[in-house]
Image 1: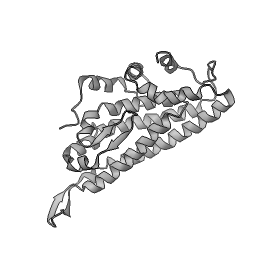
Image 2: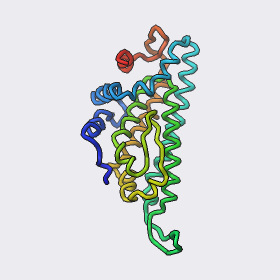
Image 3: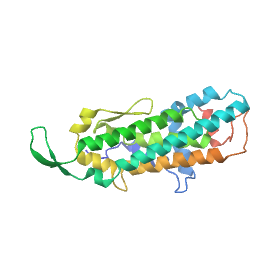
Image 4: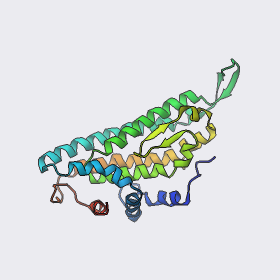
Amino acid sequence: MSFYNVTNNDYFSSFFGNTGVNGTSSNNNFLGDYYAVQNGSYYKLAKKFYANSSKDETEGAKVDEKSIELVKSSAQEAINSLNKLMDDSLFKKVEMTDKDGNKVVDYDKDKILDKLKTFVEDYNSLVEDAGEMDGDNSLKAGVRMVDQLKVYRSSLAQIGINNEGDNTLKIDEEAFKTADMTDVKSLFTGNVSMAKNMQSKLLQVYSATNVDLNSTSGLYSSQAIKNVTIGNMFDSLL
């Protein structure tokens, strides 16, 4: 198994989700947003946003700032835990004692699993917090983040990490411990790895929260939603 084990549709979707190095959107992001509408990710993250859209302008502004700050904090936590999981030293073989009492040289699966569990917890918290936010840029960055991970759905499943219907992750610890650790290493280390792509998406979410928080003026819809942009166009498609 290799982390390149993705479908053609997944492969092309990974291109649709790209953004520039400075976090700005390109035409590819337009296609990425359209793809997100098609596969339901936009709706799953945005449904709680709609529930808050009827609030009055003053209350909406307060909720918006608080929720975006929460997403910013969650994104930072996920970035930190992913960085620890991506550390090459984590995947160096070490001498240890197996269950039969024999000395062996192997990957420290328990240590890797511990770092993985922390990242999954932080990632899931970010996904859940993203469903509460009102920030347009943050919402779209969150959608691209969850869609990027779906590109690797089959590869992750083969090492015991399942992508749930609500966009969160769930670890099958027994399946993980019996997985080929070279496949795990390929997914989480290196400049062309799944983890590297996810790191980029997480940084974009963090950057987007700053953009939303720094927006002090903008257009308002009839429901007092700040910063009406092209992202709102997709709302009408849902």
